Length: 290
Image 1 (cartoon, rainbow, N blue to C red):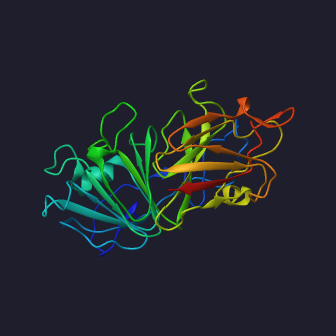
Image 2: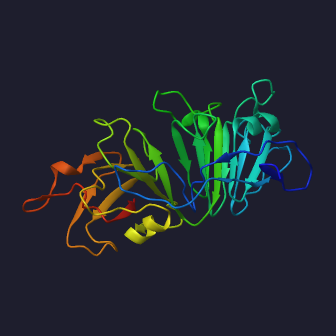
Image 3: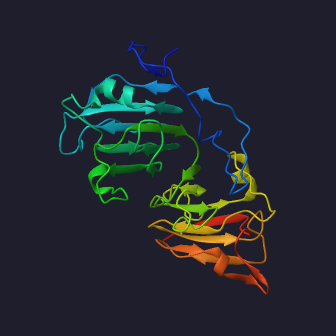
């Protein structure tokens, strides 16, 4: 079976590829600095994709639609809808009509339906800078900036679509900016240790205004924080969300610390209680949207 199975059973030749699966069951390099563990093994990732369409498409639960241009301004723009858990590499992006030789070169606009999350990657092997798109969002990639200040427009080289609930947990490698509705929990300060690892937690603000991520929620996604001197040392909050970190596994601990939206905090410098700093003591997190 090819990596992409077409929704209407029409055949397009694609390449089956293996890569670590992320999302509902994560497989990744060991996150030693965070002491997170995952027991999954690499597997092929498949999904369903529509044939080439044109113009505005209806939003579907568990799906995302990718456009060559903004459909409200270009009614005949190329459109492809991707559903279920799917990983799309550069070969497939090119083959479906967004390649460098195509009239609709590059992806410029993305609409995400209910219960779907989209990860956009800078490089073709699902690495590099990442942009996370939440359920029930419309994103004009000309207005979504990468760290170097360039827009994401036409810079998407690989994609993941995940069918899941209103919250998501995603692996992060290196110093990245969190999604607007997300926060990143880092093993080390990413400005001091550029190759540190972490977990990005996100929520669809239109579905939940104050989601809580318990210790078990994070562990259930494939990551386990071990309390033996290693854990969360730095938190970055996205543009639209405040972060409340708690010392209890179910947000029931005695101590909490707040990270204001669009800021970051080095936890090793913040006192939790006498003779104890916040570094490595975060066990659960709440996101607050305003």
